[in-house]
Length: 112
Image 1 (cartoon, rainbow, N blue to C red):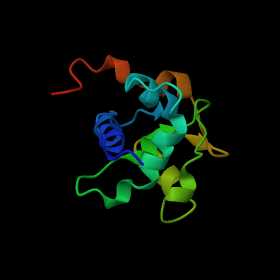
Image 2: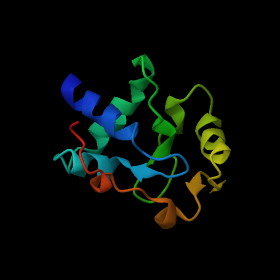
Image 3: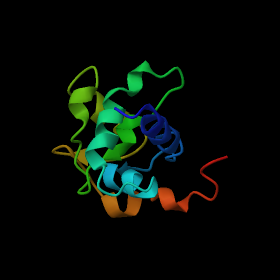
Image 4: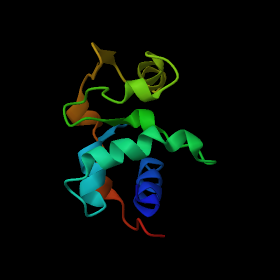
């Protein structure tokens, strides 16, 4: 487990705009570790230990599926959090995923 990588993941996820979503792979690619999507997932699995909130519910797989929902307190929590932001979820898949997708490379100055 790479604590520095996890910290970087948390920093990026905190920048995902309200009402938008991103993917594990997009975060990994942005951090220079394109083949580390699973490690991004592992980081998000541990994010509840962070003092500052990490909106992990906004991170999905590359097809817009809620593959990380088991990391939340209840099976429906991830879906409920997304829906509270106006995001439609049907059968564990975000509707209009491409339109709602936020690419971390849109960040101007990540390392502030």
